[in-house]
Length: 588
Image 1 (cartoon, rainbow, N blue to C red):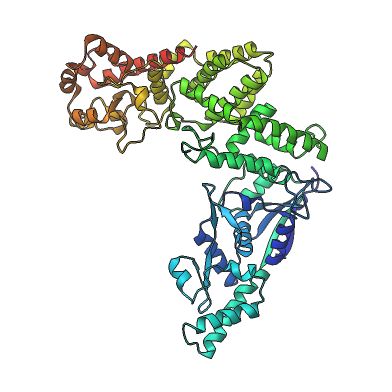
Image 2: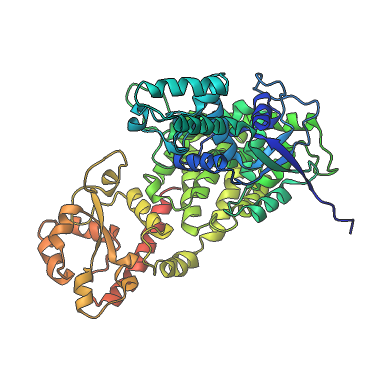
């Protein structure tokens, strides 16, 4: 084993130097264009600590291995097109300081622009988040950004502030002196000292992530997506901006006049989500780590880095991201999911399953040219099966990697389809349907994949709402917004009645098999009566055929309302599993 070396050096900066390096692009601060998660009060506290001379933590930089002589794509207004240092820890602090000192706006979590306005009262050195009352009060400087953005000297600023204040109130000489001193002190925050630990460029991203976790008290884990997004900021900023614009628009409900948009009722993606799809589709890889290394320009065989290799891999990423963000592909994919009986994100228990199914949709459509009508059913089946079996709930990257490796053997659309079908058949055996699935439904979880697969199957089979002539499918439409939910999950054996008869355990009372979807007026009518009492009254409203179909599609055993509770649960779980199977089979 070689000699252990220190993998970082300590560098001291003053704040104005740091801001200058960000201005010229020597330190990469992509986050001025990124969602900023700090509240204004947190920024206020940062300024207060600095003003009092308290330490506010060091910064962690990572020297950029491919900075020398390489160019940055899409950013032409910096003297240094490629940063020599990337920020690993301290992004929010530096974004706060850069935004306030340069008077720049930041983006919030919902991608709306906002200005951070921190107010300062020179009389007692107090900081506050600006509000209407502060803006009217001559004692306050409502937005300290103006001090540095104005380009005036501290002497001029003090003079102007005192003159303005004197028109409103009388000041004693000692008060004037204190105000002048406090304003000078605020102005001089530009000289505030920072220490940065700069990690050597030879350290790989896994070690950088480990260093970050070990020294970061908040314990935020840096993931591979963070590293790829940082690389995109440096080498393809337009690509990262396109990702973020797509995510922003997916959160805004379009009005009738607006142009096509990524808005949907299933997912409001983050850039990292879409990156996963682009990497699976473009690079045939489930693990982001290996792609990160390739995008840095690393040859995985020799360990060498080159700008040519990096540019070639970024070209591949550009092509795959263009397909991922293509609105036709995006919405056609959601129509596969709707076709499989799932109506909204409320029925999706795993975002990974949704994202990886989208990658398979793109592979089928773009790499193998499978006709859309065939692909719609195939991907609908795949999503249904993967959701139901929890395929991507543990070690999703490894499972996806292995799935993609199997799919690499496909030569054409038919073999692609055959491989997916084989993977589903391996999981959905007869034993799965008749033993495993009913056993998995012995649960009281209100958001289990089995429950949502059951509702999706009812949608596929055109089931009516229990004790109603309306269809479940229509009342689950996510575009219908009412003050009361159109459909409610209702206990078939009411809780109060069960408790009165000795069943106290909530896990028993709230079993999946004790619930059915009812319209809320019915829910009110049934109240706390036992089924033996309310079922005969409701029976009168329906013909024999209607009653039989309703019972069949709601997995209700014959004469269930007269059964013992335990027997009812056991029998209904088996029937619910059979309905899920039937619904799934309709997707062939």
